[in-house]
Length: 136
Ligand SMILES: [Zn+2]
Ligand SMILES: [Zn+2]
Image 1 (cartoon, protein in one colour):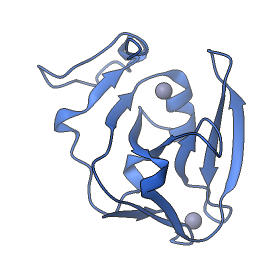
Image 2 (cartoon, rainbow, N blue to C red; image 1 turned 90 degrees about the horizontal axis):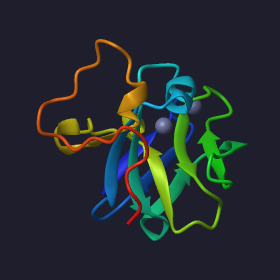
Image 3 (cartoon, rainbow, N blue to C red; image 1 turned 30 degrees about the vertical axis):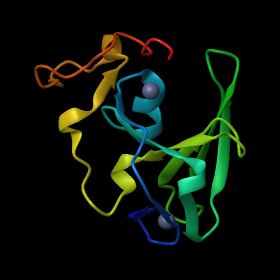
């Protein structure tokens, strides 16, 4: 069981089972949303995920492929905790820095490395893509 939550602790959530993917994304949207160098997303099945405390605010934006991206964040401290295409999508992306147990990036897949900040070094041998990874 993975547990996590926002910076102030009002929002708490948990997910069980094997995550589907771990991405480090260097795109501009992730730099903006994290106000930092990159975003870290742990993709989990929605069926394995539950909100155990608090109620998030949601901010939504259009995506390049014509869909939406909804970001759930704490109304008190503002931390983003997860992102989803919609409230009914089959998977959601937990912001990996919100997890209580420190995330291990040693096997993360790096995407949008064409936007990577100078000075950020990706360990040799890790899968990486200049933009989105190929579908499938
Ligand atoms: Zn909070
Ligand atoms: Zn991104």
